[in-house]
Length: 231
Ligand SMILES: [Cu+2]
Image 1 (cartoon, helix red, strand yellow):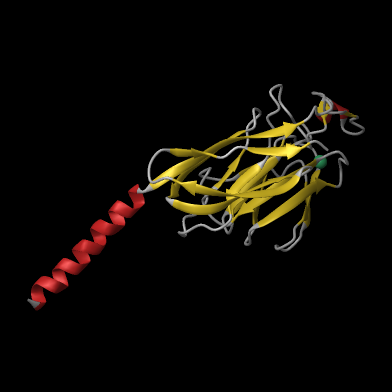
Image 2 (cartoon, rainbow, N blue to C red):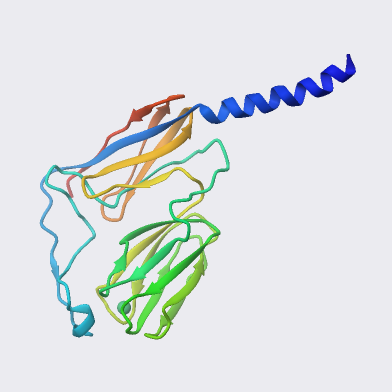
């Protein structure tokens, strides 16, 4: 009797855990802008023309597609039920390329090293404006191709370059796996969320924050569209 119990209980637990991981769905949706957004303004390149002036620069703080989809909106759940970590890239990077931060909004996992790359071969300067992490302000000379940085706590960090006044971007430090960034059409997909009810949050640098409840099914997907009022 005792023997049966001690072997049967772990076996049951193991099968419950295996089944549990199968009960997960995706959150898909589109973030729209309710109105007509102005065309992104052209930015005047005032320095290092040979590198920075190769391509035209436009204001990236509000990018709305032809069908009103908003690019670069961060969508995440606020209350995950497991401890899974964000893993979009094997090695998270932030590039300074053409005197722009690429990508303009970069989701990186908390506590994992991010490689800050200087593809331009000119002096840049990474200046961070965090709320929860330690701020830094570091020059990255032309010979320094890569510079490591780790952001320990979930955060929304504006980044600037003190050398090129127009350079600005965001590092979004994800404390868990369930984050996504909208594409140029405003679409997003958060994959493999354990079934259940959550608060879905969105953040955009110019349009701000929104939230709404979402119930994730045990299989398939739930559609959760969001809309921002015109600004
Ligand atoms: Cu720069």
